[in-house]
Length: 535
Ligand code: NA7
Image (tube, rainbow, N blue to C red; front, top):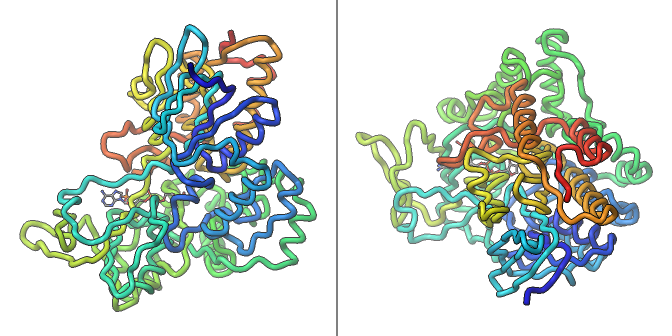
């Protein structure tokens, strides 16, 4: 006999934690599972040196409880991973969340049963549950991508993935370290690894645009200011495309209207004095217009050339693609690191990885192969983003159809919340929702509250199931892509498109524009769950 529960929640990160709190308050019984041994989700796993959030700490935090907002003290403009993990632990203590979480347990099977309108959920620890609802709080960047490079298992030294960093750390002192990848995780960790190791070699496939974070301690005055007006600050942030940054100095003018010279002067000021994503707020069409984009891209390329002393290294570090179509990275001393005598760059387009050996990585064309000797290899190679964690579980919906089959041509769902054929299964910050293009915690709160309302409405109406029609999901995917096509976002091989994973269908997954999305979610509810079938 299966244990009966109202809601199974998969994942105990920020989405899972708020789900537990919210659904409990609605009088529902909940059971949450996580592979980790504590809460925190992505912040539990990403313990690499330098891991830090790129959304300011006073914004990347829950807004659902005023006392929580007031009592927690953030210390830096951008919170580091240890501080965010402490915050997650504090929230778990404060709301007594852990009593409904089973840690170190993987959800292995999630199968819909038409005969009793329940999801049958099995775990690696032998749990068997029957749940009315399943909430996939599995995270967008939780399924690490470890490329299958030739010889990868031959390496006799130590390896680590930034997205699954060993709790005991990696001892790099005096050792020769190689970092594969130059995304955000690599760029955050490289300056610190360079300082701590004997020698560092970076293996770069695509150069990355990065701007100074200008991280710093928060002052008491600015914290008191925000805490004194948190509700209006949050409300203003929710009106922003990315649900954060309402007080960033944003210029609502195109480059051509503002004038190139003024824009470049402003970019310079922002680079030196402002930092963060706001560096690119010097005009409003950088990701809309190719010529405008080139102004910002050229500015950052010139910065790289002025910082990096060796001209050949500087050239390799200058990205060629559109700026902003891969997530802009915020750094602390990244480009400066290449001026160290103990740091080398291998530009993989010139010298591809041939194979990993017992003692390092062999690179280069046939006629100029060379071997880089290494003691440690760090895979900073990112994630199978947005769909990876969902497909790893691969829920089986109506008629025995697995999600992997329903999504063979790319993720199809409605509002990023529900997949046709998967009744009562909800995805938090799923593909098709603003998710990774926003302050994730604001998106998480909006999703959890929408799901909570949907469940309450079902119960109030004496109904058992909710799922979207195939037609509404098809229209939604078209809408998400039509909006992306107005921009330069689809113009490079980003993980937003799934382009970083060999064989993954190329579809732009996140939806641009948080406020319009929320309006649409609310309209759907007001129109009696328009686009959904409730039975
Ligand atoms: P990212 O941003 O996906 O970066 C991964 C990096 O690894 C990127 O430079 C990739 O190059 C590189 N990569 C991936 N596979 C390979 C192979 N096979 N060979 C060489 N290089 C490879 O992940 P992060 O963890 O840095 O950041 C993820 C998000 O977390 C970030 O956007 C923030 O939101 C926080 P590519 O560019 O694909 O050529």
